[in-house]
Image 1: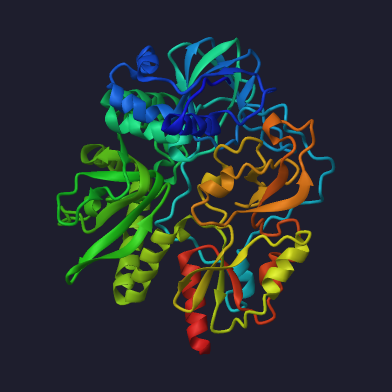
Image 2 (image 1 turned 120 degrees about the horizontal axis):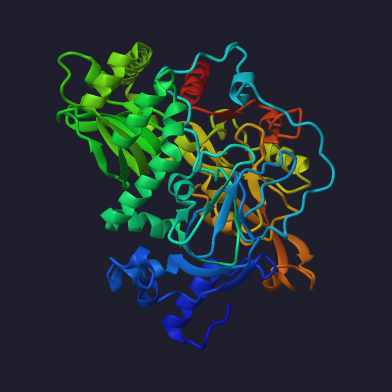
Length: 550
């Protein structure tokens, strides 16, 4: 990628663009990457013709035009991307090619990724959370709340093993995973030399908000490629016949919400059932003179069932507000009525969910401290976490045995920092949450950071990490630290810009998933004041136990 001479602000913009797009190396099948495109350049593509120059100039830093050689792997299934591809010329093949024993190959760098030698021993699957194992009184994992449903299937394309689909000029792919934070469900390979417009997530979100035509286009693709299969695999619609689901797929509305957007307002008429595709919604209710957070909703969960099922509840009982960007499926009242009439099992499921939510919110009204915890958890991202390290500061002596235990388990390099936010008498340590939607995985140029295939564990492979800081910059919770290794990259290193530079690696908690002892931060604490929690309910149990011991 060659750039002409620039100065001042223009030069800084060019450097920013280069940093975003050109740090992926030379030997990847990427034949050419454009300079930052102008509005005139973008308007040459049908995709951007309706936008004015000012909008396109804003979007252009997150858009590139790339030429790819035939046979290049753009991404493999399981990869997390913040990127969609629009085909200008050529064709791209999509297929399934899973390799259970190899790490997922990332975008741009398929020839840089190698499978480490040796198997590393058997992996440990956890059937209980660490918190449950710590609290002896909690003997059995309680049945899951009826309001909680299985995640929607993260499927961009419904392909069978061995099946292949070819896309050509004017088609887009990768956008569903990028917009929803889902891993890609297929492998994409250039079937010929290709010219692709590559669009990062910030530009995708702007395009959907600013253009009804673009939103309608991407929604149509989602209906055609994914929605039927996702509805079919959601517990709500389990047992519904295929003909009904096919009809429903064409009728539901796909709703995209911005941060802070109100989806339903308490007291206003209830008009539909909503299903959360991705993101989080805060459920609040007016008590006295303020709105109080009662609970929150995440992927696969529904709301509106109580209002639609119960006689006399014609208005929303709660206000629902989008936390971050949220994607919803909206089922009209008339389609909802047909659904419950034709499928009694679905109606029973909805009644159970409605009753459970009424009980939950009723209990929350009796316990004001829970509303504070919900607000705190939404603000700090705890709702994203599958394993959060918390420490009881009333018991902790600051001996740092937890840090030393972590370091000794990981070759002298601790994987967390004993500091962070406080709630009540607990410290929320700066340790990886192992998020439901791990944004740190998006855009890693070597695939070094990935799911470890042990529960929800996210790990970093030091042998693949090039120290680019992409994951550390993207982590919203400062849980990834860049460490100096004391080494220098050799003259043969790829990408070339690494050569001669000090080598750094990203360091983060991996839950000690290869150890039979479990997380060292917990097992090394001599005072039993370090805990790993997975849900807000577990946090509340921990608070109750701590309070009883004071």
